[in-house]
Amino acid sequence: MQSHGIHTAELPRSLLLERLRWRIAILLLSFAATVFGLLAPYAQKLFTDDLIAGRPAQLWIFAAFFCLLAYHALWQLNTWVATREGLISQKALGDSAFKRVLEGPGGMVGRAPAGVAVSLFAVDIPGATALLDQSLLMFSSLVFPVLLAPIVLHVLFGIPWWASIGSLGLLGLVNYLLARRQSRFFMAFKQLAAERTGLVSEWVQNIRTLRILGWVNACEQRIFALRKRETRNRKKMVTNGQVMNAIASSATFTLNLLAVMLLLEIRKRAGGNGTEPTPGELLALLWILGVFLSRPLRQLPWMLVMTFDGLSSLRRLGDAFGIPISRPSLSARAGASRAGAAASDKTLALEISGLNLESDGKPLLRDIDLSLRTGSLTAVVGEVGSGKSLLLQSLIGGTGARFDRYSLNGEAANGPLDPKVRGQIAFVPQEGFTISATLRENVLFTYLDGAPSAADEMVAHSLAMSQFLPSAERVTHGLDSEIGERGVNLSGGQRQRVGLARSHFANRQVVLLDDCLSAVDVDTERRLIDELILGSWKGRTVMIATHRLAILPYCDEIIFLKEGAIEIRGRLPDLLARSSAFVEFVRKEQDAGGPPAP
Ligand SMILES: Nc1ncnc2c1ncn2[C@@H]1O[C@H](COP(=O)(O)OP(=O)(O)O)[C@@H](O)[C@H]1O
Ligand SMILES: [Mg+2]
Image (cartoon, rainbow, N blue to C red; front, side, top):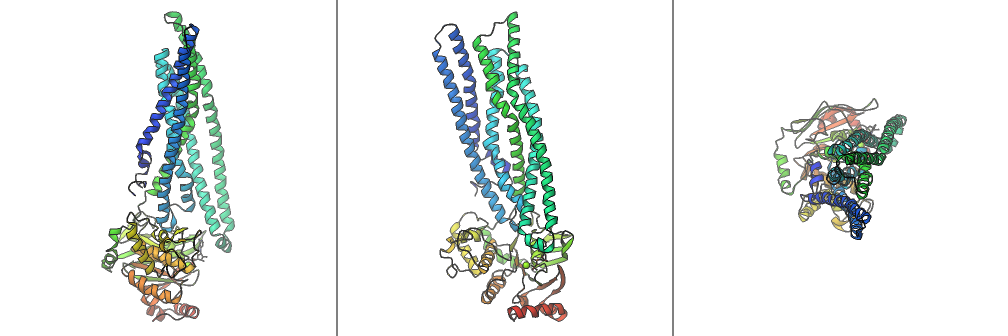
């Protein structure tokens, strides 16, 4: 991990400074290419002068040829090095981003919804690494000619400093201003596209719900409005880009004009006391100004745009990666469950008040307060659609619900997405889910540092606790079995148990289970309750949404939800005694799924 992972807080620095030797190699190769590029016209000058004077000149033409060859070869080599560096960084960044996505609760990077996370992968990672394979390369192929040309012009041709530096500076300034403007449009372009992707993916994922609730039009209109903003931005971006192109491609013309003016100037001075320039010198001057400098100056605006763009991508990645995620470490695990139990039952693990969630004006969760004591077991029950899943998802920041107060372990936090909270809570979704990878990777998920064999033991233990014994399931290669899309397709109950094993392995103090025993059989449910929830997780703060009754007798508190609000809360006997609605609910569930355990 230390060696190849990009470290979160210092992302910008590590992207540019890791493999520093190769970054310097890019600069040195550019420098060498530039020197050969400038030696070529000098050899050409000597050739022309010797030829006109009737001296043997073959050597010089070969020297010129060689210099040009070296210039192009070094340039190609440098492109190769830079491209390789770009790809290596892309892989390191991609790996880090992937881990962030897996580790972040709700499958998100930072505060970002799905679309923004997608754009981090699709746009910002290549954007940031373009700093290496494009910007750095272009910059070095541009900065050395631009720096060296005035020196060569001065030393070899006696051209005054102010003339060359002044004209290059002016060109640079104009390009800089245009490029800044362009990069702002680029940035808006990326943000708007990410927002739209997010909206579209939400829309696609929820299309059934949206149709049932009659929100399809509203949603489409939001996408359309965003599309309009994108189009306006794109128009400005294209116009500005055309102006930039026009100015950049006129660089050749400007430079030739400059060359002619300088020639006139030299000639004027030669009329006084200097010497006339030789034809070789004239040729070299035209080559340097008209040819050698014209490519870098045509590239200048795009180099700047790309740099600004890369920097903004880097900043976005830095923001997303800057949120700390607590990862389990091998040494910390051993004592963790005891520590959890020891943290006396007076402390509150999770306390929230004023949880409200609405969607387009319709309230989905209303004024919910919770105080979960450390080590307590809480059930959330209610009819299908009463808001159990939304409540649990809200607690990990998966819905955008508002909170008056959100505090974890007595520390006030700025909602569930607060860096203090993120990664502290394990969540098992109702359907359970798997990635297309091995069983081991599906449980590990959090990419433990080092000691894979010790991790294997823990993975097997977590699976056993979750009643998933590879030998008894249809997976034939133990922890190495490929599952998910490209491997064995697990049943709903198997997926739920892998999800449980994952959160057991993740070893977090607060565990939220969304109806994740729904697809397992009664015997397995019994064992999960005894061995996992009441056994291994004793001392953890567990909250389980369920429509099954078996766990209710063991709960410190049962929260009965109705239409997104708490109807009544308490222990099982209280509720049975006090609420006819709850009794009615229990009776219905009993009819559907057998009697509650004693
Ligand atoms: N993403 C969503 N946007 C709007 N409404 C939703 C969304 N998800 C669920 N709902 C609605 O919120 C209510 C509660 O849903 P949910 O929490 O899934 O219920 P439960 O888990 O208790 O069965 C339902 O009426 C459902 O249609
Ligand atoms: Mg649900």
